[in-house]
Amino acid sequence: MAKVKPFRGIRPPRELIEKVASRPYDVLNSEEARREADGNEMSLYHIIKPEIDFPAGTDEHSEPVYAKAVENFNAFLRNGWLRPDEREHYYIYAQTMDGRTQYGIVVAANVYDYVNGVIKKHELTRRDKEDDRMRHVKVNNANIEPVFLAFPDNPRLQEIIDRVSAGTPEYDFVAPDGFGHHFWVVDDEAMESAITEEFARMPHLYIADGHHRSAAAARVGLEKAAADPAHTGEEEYNYFMAVAFPASHLRIIDYNRVVRDLNGLSPEEFLGRLEKDFTVEEKGTEIYAPARLHNFSMYLGGKWYSLTPREGRYDDNDPIGVLDVTISSDLILRDILGITDLRSDKRIDFVGGIRGLGELSRRVDSGEMAVALALYPVSMKQLMDIADTGNIMPPKTTWFEPKLRSGLVIHALD
Image (cartoon, rainbow, N blue to C red; front, side, top):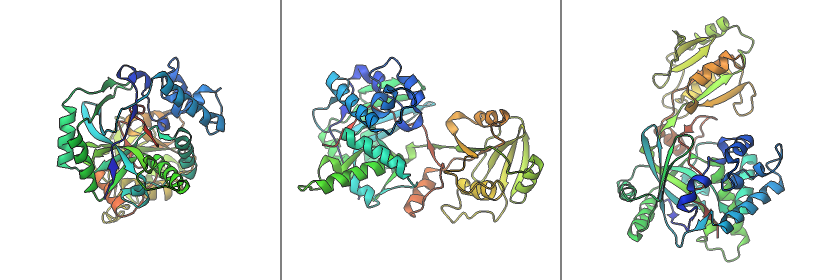
């Protein structure tokens, strides 16, 4: 059963929240972070992407860069740009995009729940990315950014979310990307006990986004436990910060593919190969979005096409085989275009649906890419089914939007 606890958050004063809060470290590169933080010494980028305080081109994984993160974190604390709460709390964090708001509970999740599979994952992690986040957690002795979790809908927790969010938020602002962020402190001991109890009844939590942060937090916790002769399992380092959302609140958007060439085929030959496994319908020059599961849209040679796999080309009883990302990877990318490793092949790139399908046609029309594929988004049920069966999703399957804003609260490990 899931073990969570409140924690003594480290947070910006209300009047500084928009100065401090930032996008997550992994959704932008160093130059983009440098531009966003320009002229703002309070930006969290100085902690989560401290290479921006060095000349362009500095290795972001070098020792001086990690040391700068600690120096900046300490400066934020010293200057009062971040302040620890007086006691432990849970928090409610809501995000608004396109008029729709999703509400989550900020908790300290248990390292051993991750290790033992109570917190379930659906993606593989890369060791180099784990190492980077592990070093960042260790040097700061804190989870600066949260993991994004989901849990099965729970009426009692929903009631608490509704009651707390009916009050005045601690933070309430619209970020430069147009997404709204709203944050409340749970300051009621009965509610806090109820949150702990309800999570303790859940057999599993699910990582939605933040697999590398989860893995890094677990490694740090286990390392600290091994080095602590008085270890009891209740120390703060046994926990990491997460925002847990009811599954029905979340929406996964499409994660699309663009490919540089047709593997030596002409457009006519490529279309002919597709017809072996798909019903191919030309849709013209207007953007065509996939209409349902097992329907793809493709942009090739200035035209949009609908692709529907023929009977028997996929297995709806297989939690992996049923995924459109699997169907497209096997029947198009592998069998026709010769792309077998989505993680490393330089001929393929991935475009989050937040950019719109027009981004796909733009990249093909520019000559940079030869063909684009748009996929119908994965559902939360599919994600949880895959995690429950111990399977791993293919790379670049899920894109959650909006992303969690960083800097609203930080979890110290002592």
